[in-house]
Length: 373
Image (cartoon, rainbow, N blue to C red; front, top):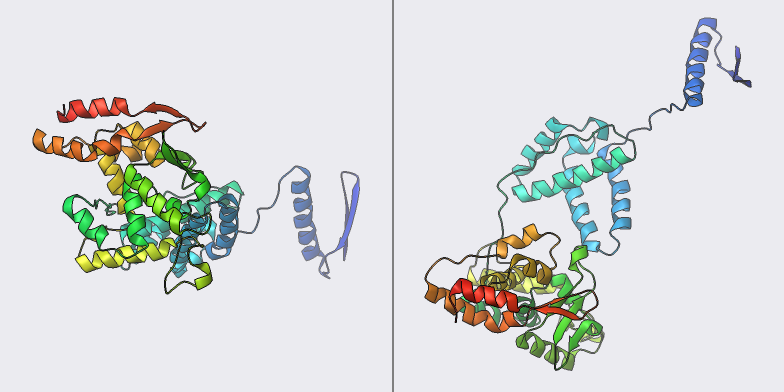
């Protein structure tokens, strides 16, 4: 049976392929409704994928937006893999993912991993659903409740323990650890450092970080005498534009002193030393940065100076290092004297690369705070 109708002067004729007139009329009515929706701008909703079907599209978008930050893509992929290991969530269409399903996922994961790891997966799912909302695949994003009880890394290499620990590290980890403790760089910034971003002369010495974890990571980091000596030693062995180069039994000989050192190699050496000495779980390679910024805060640097040196995205992150020491003034004076040389070389820099101001204001503030004359 044929069905033919005029819709806004357009003649449409299609076959219903039905012999029953009543059924044919029902099909015709449905077809007319669909055409009418199109005429007034109403569109049928797109098919809604499951979470496991949608994740590849999300990862494509993340790779596109984070081309300069491959570790960000790795973070999201790992987080999604953990989320997809929970089959009820993986097989669920993204428009039916709700707070109850997320709570079941959370309960399931807590049997295996720490709250921090679960929260990372929840954050990845949340980003995926917000993207689905932007693409008009879903109408709303459910409420996400992050878990409490994340363990915060607080380990600091201090006093005699610092030299005992670093002095027992194998190379290249020992050299890099000393440099990180002296500069507060992130390990990725250190491993990717090239000679064209190292500036040392009679008047000033600094390294330029051209990109990093955040936009604020672009900065000028002043160098202490110890850091300068490390770089001079590296200049003697490096045969490429990379400052910290790789060598050893696990590296092909043609790459010795040419290829950049692997952050994974350095991190493994650091963790092995930690286990050897029986130090806490939070004694990780990133603890060198935490140590450097703790020294800076303890010496009297204000929170904005710490943010500048560290390249933090938010001053809130820097606030944890703005210390008021407990204990006697004698202890405070000793702490100040041990870090005075370092703090006097901290320089705030403008985008032009020229020093905008010294840290003298911070020095004065710290001397007053700690009773140092």
